[in-house]
Image 1 (tube, rainbow, N blue to C red):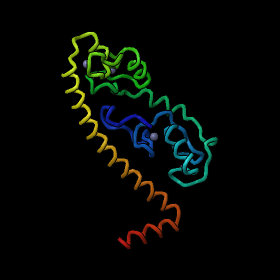
Image 2: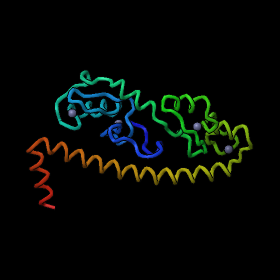
Image 3: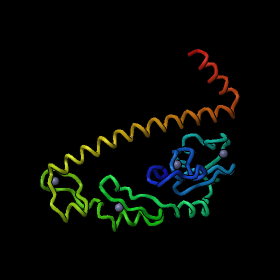
Image 4: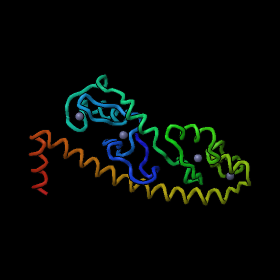
Length: 186
Ligand SMILES: [Zn+2]
Ligand SMILES: [Zn+2]
Ligand SMILES: [Zn+2]
Ligand SMILES: [Zn+2]
């Protein structure tokens, strides 16, 4: 799974986007036919389908290659900390964001509250006064935002899937017939 587009400021070069997840390539792997996908996306796809997602050419996972120059290019992009919903407004080099979130971000979760709410406390909350009621309110607000963004993501993914199905169909005539017939019937 790649990096969410909304974690980057401004538009991202379409060449840096994985056609399987629609996000910025994470650890890109290239197929023998030259198509590039996130490692996790490509492996998951090949395990199920066994051919390139774009051209339908049969390939095995052994034929996938790392694309280091592309990976390094992506690591140079600036990305927002993934704890921005909790209040972190840090923007860092992609190369440094994981260690920021693990070691330095004061909005990272450090332990669960033992006073009642059971929510994960961030470093900042632990050092300040934590109110379970306040925390639960914020939490439910975050969940609502999360639901909205998941719904948006779902719509985007299903558009992507439809596009892929059509692309695959265009490379395989019998499928084109089936799809055209199916659409004729609707
Ligand atoms: Zn991907
Ligand atoms: Zn291909
Ligand atoms: Zn942060
Ligand atoms: Zn609490």
